[in-house]
Length: 471
Ligand SMILES: Nc1nc2c(ncn2[C@@H]2O[C@H](COP(=O)(O)OP(=O)(O)OP(=O)(O)O)[C@@H](O)[C@H]2O)c(=O)[nH]1
Ligand SMILES: [Mg+2]
Image (cartoon, rainbow, N blue to C red; front, side, top):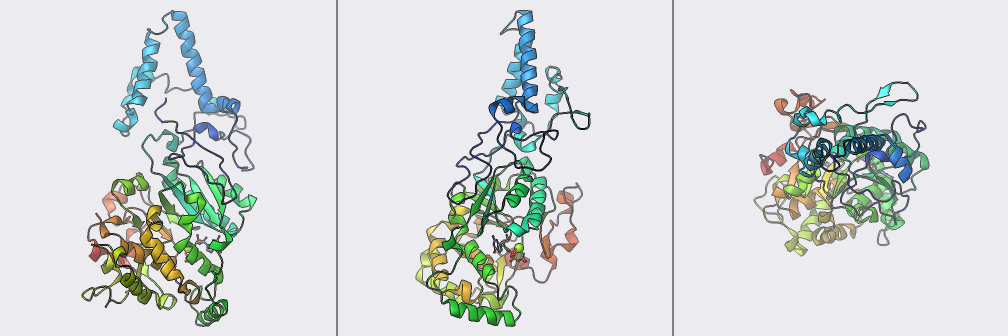
């Protein structure tokens, strides 16, 4: 009955300003009674409010507990054996299962169900649904019953109000495949205020806590040192050349924000790890373990699924700038790094190297925020930013993040999530191992149509030579 650990929940599920952070709690699992059962009056998808204590006690799961407890007490009083009889040992036994982390030690076992003393619990009082008249068994919220430890992490998105539908698609996919079993909070950021409709639409998609934050103006505008006339000329030129997003200013703010500012947002201060989620993405396989805890346990810092080539025209002077940086800050270049992913011929070292344009596709990232907050990355971003080339060229956060991860970390700290099936138009990654992912029904994707290792634009081979087996 109490196989899940009711972990503390904090603060509200919706904040609208950067100054309010969602929670400093390590655990943000929702308690089951925070969410009304289907029969409750929430047909208009209104954001769910935290109930009062009275409402909480009258919500279905707790009502069941209250009834069971009342019944038990009555039995004990009648038998006059308070503290000794079989009913008490029943309770004590259940309690001790919970405290011994019973479920944790018997993954998926049905042993508990077969114990005679638990039969009563397994035949719960049903509630009549007011609308349909059906008797409804209790709702089951996997995240609330999952007792395993969590990492200090959040699902993080930069998103626009007008992307609500495609963002809800992403949420539906990630909640179904992963988060309904783990209950990690969502943190959403926007350069504009989120509309009430947007918030309502997002809150209806998850039982997790959601924080909405507006990005400060200084993180989404031209810095003083950028010559705006020059920037506009360059944009016009790239537009004429047909470079993708070549004449788009907001795309440049987005890339600069993702390169140098997202991890400094107040709303992300409480967290160590994040999972970046974009609108319109899809996860095609069940994710049955916690990738954040995996990152922590294995001392990983940066995780990706797809590696791909960058458009050269958008980063013409990025690599020479990286070389200058390495000369000025040699202490930031890690031993055993993954430079061979970025450079095909490494015989002349970084100094004599040519960038092969490979990068981790950063629309998916599971990574450690503390890396971006480190001195090495801070120095790197400032060095890049001062050139103004986030605007004059169109430097993307993907090559910027990738170059940093590949050069400033030992390669052992970078991990390819081969097992996370991920789709961001027009490419998808589908795990190749059929017995592990397909024969058992975990996935809905075709390994033969996976971007890697099959597509010519994939940088799978460049990663493979760095780490033939992802350890
Ligand atoms: N709030 C806000 N978010 C933005 C803006 N531009 C892009 N984004 C978000 O930034 C992320 C990257 O933008 P995308 O337009 O997906 O860029 P992309 O992935 O390089 O290109 P696509 O292939 O078009 O997806 C997404 O999560 C967008 O929702 C913007 O102007 N404001
Ligand atoms: Mg995108």
